[in-house]
Image (cartoon, chains in turn orange, red, yellow, purple):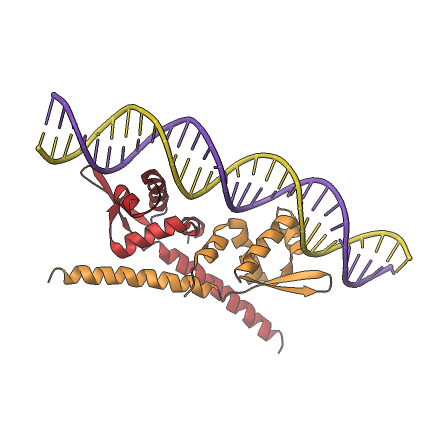
Length: 102
Length: 102
DNA sequence: TCCTTTCGCAACCTATTGGTTGCAATAGCC
DNA sequence: GGCTATTGCAACCAATAGGTTGCGAAAGGA
């Protein structure tokens, strides 16, 4: 089970998360298209997309002279996974505590 | 429903997450205790704990001359919540796509 | 073929952040 | 009361991150 750190870090930035949510709810788009919809430059967006791609949150496909990115939700399972283990440890601690009073 | 950004940002830092997991699985501790277990100074830890406190991931209680911190898992529900809405938007998009082929 | 998009790379700038050191204040034990 | 732990506050530092500008290259439509 791999570390959720890179994912959390990727999602921690507001513009990056906005980018991901945009792609997830509105569908695929290129960096230039996205730049037209947001108040930052294409290059900034491209960097964010590269990072999202590196953690698998986005899928990159070249179509002619443009590069279209689409959202991938699969890696988010890793985060859900981590949340679950946190919950389990918490429960385990409660359990141990209860036992200590018997 | 408030935005998960502050939470994600809080969890994005490795030492901060380590701190939280330590408190969650091993139980409450003071900043000084934690500093003895980790390779960074107490002040650095104190700052992280303050941030965790500000997003509700940690509970601060003064006991005599020391301040003991304990983990709070409740805010993580917000993250789970966000994951769910992302999944729903994704499903919605799939649904619309399928309908468009009928 | 030429011109326009679109993209990638690189340099650069600035604000933020994680971390440190130093010191004052306070709570408790002897 | 005096010594010792423990905390809080502030200044400071270095590295990183988010963003911009500037450029060269390649793909496609006119």
